[in-house]
Image 1: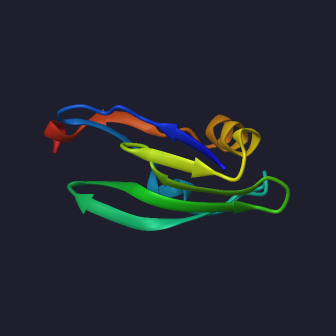
Image 2: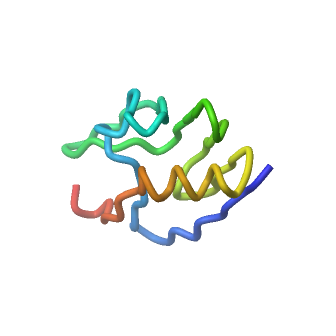
Image 3: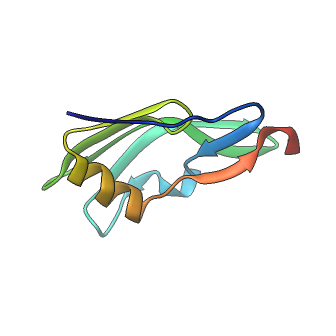
Length: 88
């Protein structure tokens, strides 16, 4: 298993866009709960791929993956967005 830690501080946000949820042509199926407070975003998520396996977690804390290769493929195709919670 591979674990990537993210050091998000203060009011910084590093989240997935709600549009990332669902099945994608690259094989990733992404699930998560949409958070809403004027803007919409996804903190905790779980993603599966028929070749790479699973990636899950929260980009503001830790993201786990079945392998580093799985994490890199997911991150390259579905990167989180960086924004400021104080913009809400």
